[in-house]
Length: 302
Image 1 (cartoon, helix red, strand yellow):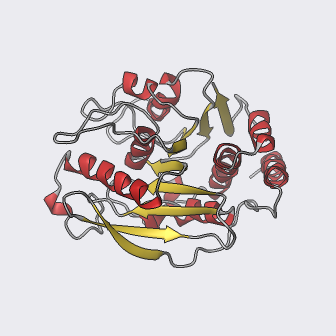
Image 2 (image 1 turned 135 degrees about the vertical axis):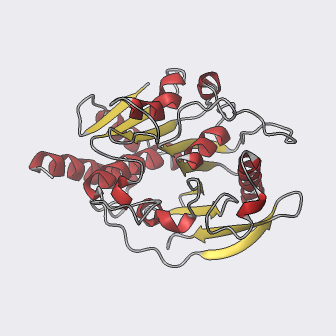
């Protein structure tokens, strides 16, 4: 980490504290360790149990985040990004999706069955919190789910009726969402995104089986497709892969963990949450002031 990198993160973090009007919520950015989540079950319309993890901030919540984990993963493997959100005052709820390696019935949901089940999980969570605004967030497959909740027009799963998105979603944070997948989401579908969004990837975030040094740019498809003027941000982090070197989602990745860049991602996400989740005009101004084409932290806006 260079001195310039440190100074930039420090400036953003201090600005975030001022925008939030509170103690620094992302202290460069080692948030306090998460306490064990409250765990409970909800139920899909067919009676299927949905295991939920919930983290509550110490103070009155500034907002609600519903988080969707990546394929095969689970909520517990995302503490490095959930902890700063909770520390900043957000209530976070996350389902254990049926495609998780930790789900007891994952073998019963092969192929596209997980697409329908994931949307059912988010519908159940939305019904649980009631008719109030929330932020949809997710990583990888979960990033696709978050964007869908925010109005991106996914391909409706067989047997599912009604809109896939949720009118209560105020904003979206999507870490490494996939490029268009014909059976799930098209480029035109991504263009239907209705709410402000922060979409992140890294220059080493190369999808499996892809070729070419720029294939990581597929993760920005939703940003590139979205209409201008809707507070859409694209975040590109130099040298960052799909798992931040094993800091999220897959702790067994050899690493090294890309913690400096994860700090940057949490800083930018914190500004976005303060601005579009908690309604801080100062945070929005600070976020816009961080827009740059320069790496290692490239922040795009449209």
